[in-house]
Amino acid sequence: DFGLVATGGMSVEEYTDDKKLALDLKNKLRMAIMEVEHQRDLLDIKNDAISDLKEMLKTVLHKPAQPITIAPVFDINASPSVVADIDANITSNIQIEINQQFPAIQGKLNELLEKLPSDSDDVKEIKDIQTSLKDIEGKAAEEVKESAAMAKFSTFLEGLESAEGRAAKTINGVMKGVETAQKLAGHYNKIAQWCGLPIVPEPFTK
Image 1 (tube, rainbow, N blue to C red):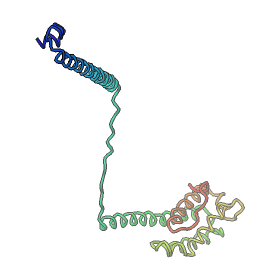
Image 2: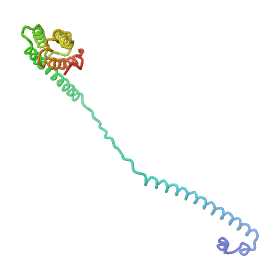
Image 3: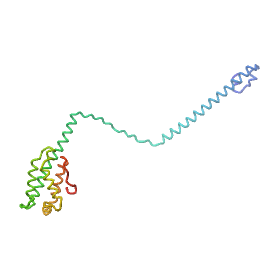
Image 4: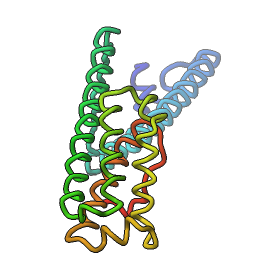
């Protein structure tokens, strides 16, 4: 009978003649109705949340995936001995390259000597430079920097660079003299950079 009352199939008055019991029953029914409404409101809120979640999932699923880039991490701990070996190899390679410049300079100076008249004043100057350069070949950078040989060589090249210089006029008159002078300046610059001397202007070198 109570079930019929709760579902509306029977009135409270039909269920009991006791007014107090009828009043309590009606209060419980009202409370039950309020609880049902409350639960219904909660379900509506949950349904809205579920709908929002579904929309978010749709957006994510239909959005193109961004590429993932994983940068490799290298943890290299070089021992002091390895670092020392690397430094030694670099120094050795530089020294080999510098040592190669001196024979190349001697060869280019010999080319000039072959092209110049034997009675030319430039011949004596070039031979003097050759002798001085032999004395500093294989020396340390500081010794090369402070040497008279590099000073003489630099002065000679500056004279070639100047169109008014005596040596420049002589060398300009021989076949491929200017080209040889330019190559000489290129070799000089490599030595100068190594030992800390001023270099010959780049347009003059080849």
